[in-house]
Length: 128
Image 1 (cartoon, rainbow, N blue to C red):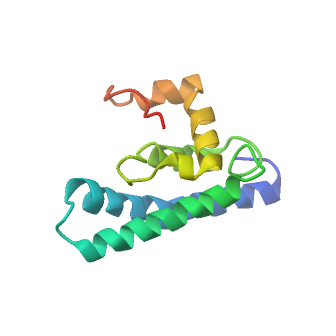
Image 2: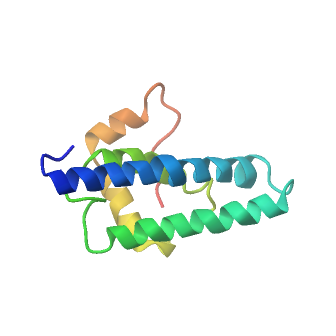
Image 3: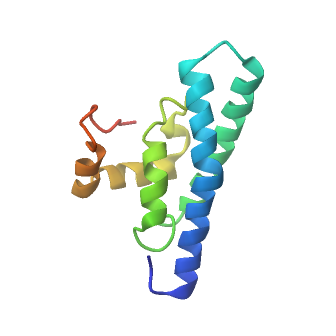
C-alpha cells in the first residue's frame, strides 16, 4: 500500500472495483462462456458484454501509466490473476493493447511466476 494518502485511496478503489465487479463478472463469464456454452444464450451475451466493458475500463485506466495506480501495488496483484484467464473470457488481449502491455510486464516478474505455481503447478502463465 502506498504511503501517500491519495494513492492509497486510489489503490483501495481499484481493489474494490476488482472485488465488486471484475472478479465476480469474470467468474460468471468462466461459468457461462467456458464451462457451459450454449446453455444460457442470454447469460452468455450479458457476461460477454459486461466482461468487455470491464476490460475497456481497465484499458482506459492503464493508458499512459505503467500500473493501475502509481506503482506496483495490491491493485495490480488483485486484478492480474483474473486477466490471466483471458482465454476463458473469450477476450483477445490484442484488442486491449494497454492491458496486454501491463499483463506481460507483470507476468515477467519472478515473484509472480513463482506465485502462479501455488498451490501447485497447473501450467505456464498464459501468453497472448
